[in-house]
Length: 562
Image 1: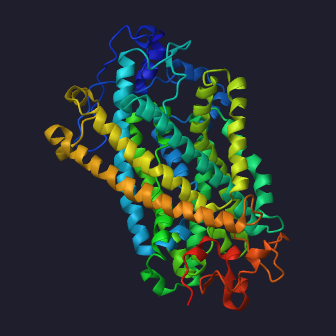
Image 2: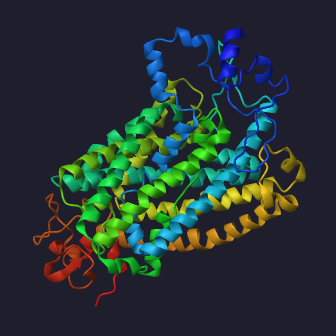
Image 3: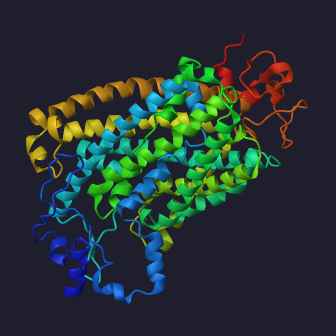
C-alpha cells in the first residue's frame, strides 16, 4: 500500500484495511483513543471507524469538480448525521404540530414531547450499543467489508438497517416483524410529505384542489429518492434546514405579533381520544432510518452526540412556534391540521411554503431510502449497478403517491402510522432486543460500549428493569390507546369525505363549493346543524356561527356543542 496514502489516512484518523484484514485473516482489534457515548462509559480498544479514501497523496490529484462533489455530497461525518437527523425528525410533523399540541393542551403536550424525546434518545442509545457490538463481531469475522478498492481501502456494498439489528438479536421472525413495522412507518411518512406539500400549496393557491396539487407535486417530491444513498444528501439537508428554520421563525413572529389568548395556556385535552391522537404525533420519534444514518458514518460511535444535538435543535424549532400559534389562534389551531391554513396570505407565507416544499422533498428522500433498500434486497437488485438498482425503486414510490391521493387526511394519517409503528420501532423492539441479546455475561463483557455508573451495576440489571417497564407502558398507551384513537378518526374521515377526497379541510362557501370550485358532498354540506363544532373554527367559514364537519375536519369529532 502506498506510504503516502497510509500516512494521509492515519492523519485523518481513518482505518486503512488491507485485503487480509478485509477477508478476516488478521486481528481486527486496533487500539484507538478512549471515547464514550456517555461520560464515564468505558469503551473497549476496538477500532470501529470505517476507511476513507479521500486522504493523503490523492488529495493533490483531485480536480475542482471532484472537490466540489465531495463538499456537497460526502455525507459521512457527525455533522452530516446531525443534518440528516434534524431534517428527518421534523419532516412529517412540523406543519401539523400546532394542531396536535392543541388537541392535547399546551402543558400536557409539551410535557409528553420532552419526556418521550428523552426516552426515545435512551432507546436509540441501546440500538447504538447493539450496532457497534455487531459491527465489531462482523469485522473480526471478516464479514463487514465486501472488498478493497484500488487504493487499498476496504469498501462496503451492504447497508445495515434497523431490521438487521433486530434479526441479529431476536432472530429471523422478529426481524421480519421489525422490517414490516419499519416499512409501514416509512410508507406513512412518505404519504405525509406528499399530502403536506399539496396542502401547503393549496394554502397560497386555492385555484386547484388539494388532490390536483398532490398530482402535480407528487412527481417532484418522489423523484430525489432515486439518489443512491445517505452519503449523497448533504446539500439537500442544508436546504431543508433553511426551510424549517425560516418557517418556524415566521410562524412564531407572526403569532407573537398577533397577540395571545391567555386562557389557552390552561386548556386541557379536548377529549381522551383527542389526547392520544395528538400524542401519537407529539410523542413521535421512530428509529426507522437512524440506523442507516449511523451506518453511513465513518465514525459511527459519534452518532449519539449528533442525534442528541438534532433532538435539542428540533425541540427548539417545534415547541415555541406551536405554542405561539395556539395562544394566538386557540380555536383555529383545533380545526386545521396544516398551520398554513391558519395564516393569511403574504410574501413571507409564500416564501415559507416553497422552502417547506424543498424540505418535504428532502424529508421524503431521507425516509424512503431505507424502504427502497428493503425493496431492492427483496427483489435482488440491492448490489446491482445503479442503472438497474435505482429504476427498481419506482414501484414503491408510485405506491406511496397513490395512497397519498386516496387518503389525504394529513393529521389523521400522521397519527395512524405513528401509533402503529413508533411504539414498536422506538421502544418495544429496541428494549426487547437489548435485554435478550445481553442477558449473557460474555456478550456484556465483549461489548465495545459499557454502560456508565449505576446502569452497569449487578450485570446491567438497572437497564433491564427500565426496558421491561418501557415495553409494558408503550404497548398499552402508545400502541393500544394511540391506535384506537387514530383508527376511529380515520374511519370517521373516510365516511365523511370518502376515498380520493378532492379537498379535505378546505373552506366551504354557501353554494356548497370550495374556493377551487370543487363540489362538496351534499350530505356533508347539509350537516350544518347536526354534527358541528361551535366557537372552535374560523368565523368567516361558518353560517350563523356553525361549522359543518366538512370544514371542521377531525376536531368536529371532539367538540362539545353548547
